[in-house]
Image (tube, rainbow, N blue to C red; front, top):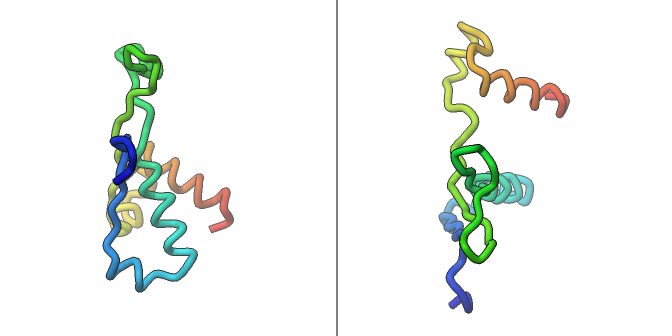
Length: 92
């Protein structure tokens, strides 16, 4: 189907996709692409296979938290702080 085995395959729910406008579709695809990360070795250097190709890893979310927790305790975690800073840079 692809001519070669893909490094990553993103599968989206068509019913949900059909309800999204162009901006939400763009945000969704960008978000999913950010899960594709260059793997790191034990020294935190980019990892490559024997042929010199990058090794891939799945990147998790920066933070998972409830708005109520942040409302009560503020940006108590480094990931939350980065998210707040990113929103401020965007003018949110």
